[in-house]
Image 1 (cartoon, protein in one colour):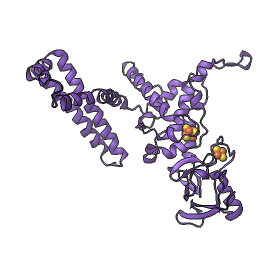
Image 2 (tube, rainbow over the protein chains, first blue to last red):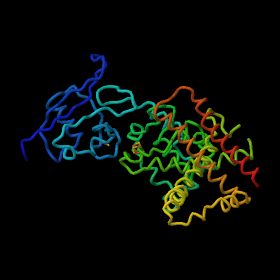
Image 3 (cartoon, rainbow over the protein chains, first blue to last red):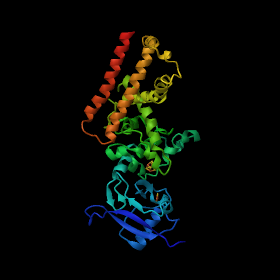
Amino acid sequence: MTNSTIDIDILRYRPEQDNAPFVQTYRIPYDEEMSMLEALQYIKDEVDGTLSFRWSCRMAICGSCGMMIDGVPKLGCKAFLRDYYPNKIKLEPLANFPIERDLVVVMDDFITKLESIKPYIIPAEEKSLEQGEYIQTPEQMAKYKQFSMCINCGLCYAACPQYALNTEFTGPAALALLARYNRDSRDAGSAERMAIVNAEEGVWGCTFVGYCSKVCPKGVDPAAAIQLFKVESAKDYLIGMFKPE
Amino acid sequence: MSHQTSQPKRSHEPVFWGLFGAGGMLTAFLTPVMILITGILIPLGIIDSDALSYERVHGFATSWYGAAILLVLIALPLWHTLHRIFHGLHDIGVHRGRDWQQVICYGFAFAVSVFCFTLLIQML
Ligand code: SF4
Ligand code: FES
């Protein structure tokens, strides 16, 4: 190991003492194995215990360590110093979310959106336990599996220019989650959820920039879910014209 | 109106998105070909300019199928373009008078479509 160091700029904000966010620079020993999250942990343990950030799994599965790294939404545990060294790195809280403290953001709106799309299976008829499980073939599962891989990290909302302009937009992860349930053969709640899809704040708030899918660390491709839904919604519109309810 | 008890209001965007999509297809696939023929191959004499002589073009435009093709080729890319401009204005942050922006953008596409339609009908 070498004795080289790396500089990291971190946007800090402690509501009880700072009037506005400001940048603080930390110099730490460079290690090519080190992730951004480990760098933050090093700073917290060895340099400045007041720094706040979220994390849990350290392996891109819990979705808590999202942050802007040189302006790009990424998971701290999945980004490595070696890809930036010897340049200085800039860490900021996820864009488009209010800052709670340092790199911690307020995710309430995001969670509300996820809950709003009825993220649970609505069966055509309830079965009792004795009647057994709802059976599904691998082919039926393949229809929605990709959209079920979301870890709710919020990177796609930080990437979305439409959410940035108007937070009424249901947004990429919630619409991908909606697709996950509507495409599930065990679910019969499509009609209820289509009302959310059909709205201006539903898929029609999207102008297909596609950056959400680019930053998604799990290959969910929310942009694809939304484009597929535009076709569905257009069909639904036509049907709605002929049979007004 | 809709099958739901709660708030979300159905958007009429599918109509404009449909025209936008159809126009986009034409723009992507046919416009380059048309530019190639009328802007490069004919002026360079690679295609004989008689191929686009007044008589031939007039004959085409005054047949019912020719007129239909021309209308589609003019109107749809126009709807495509103005839909893009309308949403582009939002994207670059021009938020004032969205209603007027909408009326002007789609109104223009509609007006030119009608104009073109009338012109073609008259020649038939
Ligand atoms: S869709 Fe991807 S980027 Fe968006 S919250 Fe889910 S995992 Fe994160
Ligand atoms: S710490 Fe769990 S995703 Fe990064």
